[in-house]
Length: 545
Figure 1 (spheres, rainbow, N blue to C red):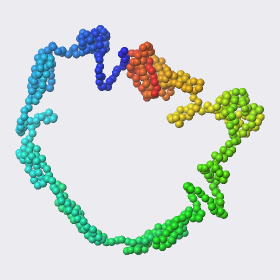
Figure 2: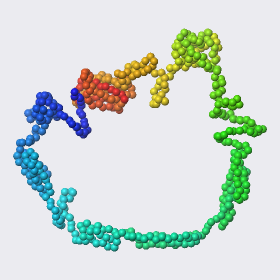
Figure 3: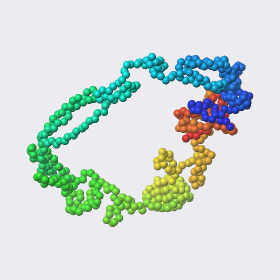
């Protein structure tokens, strides 16, 4: 079965391989075509085309090339400068051109012509002409040079030609070395500059005598001297050609944090230590055990730890009776105030056990139930519906037979969280969700399956002139424009660029056909046919990806 294309097919200059033209036994079998249509006539064994005028004044089928001169009628070909004239003379005249010789091989329908240059080997002279690349004849000037000879440091290969090669002679150089170890105040010579000519040859050297300076070594000591309170001084003192203190470095301590003591004199020492009472300005990290051993102090560390209204964090769980405890241990100690009271059956109001009405049970703050049966609970202020899996917490102490209000309880509904959408699994809220029965099946146990014959992203639209489809016929084309954002298709936010299209017949056998489909930057998509196409003839299968 053939595939119907309802618009032009553009191969974009790509070749069609192994193509076979449609075959008929006669023009009548091929029927009435359109201008340019081809078929192969199996009876005449030839290719035919449908032309606007066969020579009879009417359109019809004609053999391809029938308007040209056929073999066997006699063809005359005359070759002139750059052209060939075809005449119905039955004679072919072949003429040689300038520097071109033509020869014939074969005969009849297999005649071949061979063109070749008429040039022969020889020696060019001054009057000879040559064809330039801009298609002009020119002569090459000849001179009187018969030999190229070498000179100083120059040698020539093939001196008499035709192509002499001039080279510079290789020059060898012998290098000499010398060493010297001059002391303070000694002299030595060095090359200061080199002069060369334009050819690169060295023409002069300038040799300079260099005198080294005298010995300037100095000897220094670094004695320690006492500084002001809680400081010491290191003095850089000259003891050679110079004298006296050249530079000093003072090391200072910080009150309450760093203490400085010194042993003065040459080869003295500076001791950096903590003072008796240390102040830590910022964080202190200790890898070992902190031991408090002093007693009788009057400051904040007198046999106790004063946090000055700050908290202790990351305290490990104590295991001995003398260990400190953290907040988690304390919360566990008081957890008995709110305990699990078991299941709550709400089938018969006020339920079992009774948590509402005049005969309610007593509860402590934090006591809670888990609903095991659905039902309604009547309180003094309102009625609350609960389902299996819901939690009921006592907000405060509730005395027995007190007819409590609903506000004295907190109800945590198991299905309160509705499933949400997100970009990733971790960022998506999980909860209760519903499914479109048109696309999914859900069993009593909550098993969800996509219907095998349903595509949640697929739609079908007949090409008619009723919303969301519109038809326009103009300039030899029929255009059906579809609004994909319509509620009957993909709804608000649909983009044409994300929709695939298949065009089919609207009745059996529902054959796939090919039209021109264009997509806008919004929700508009167009299906374009050549010629006039009525409504309801075709439809499109749409898939949003």
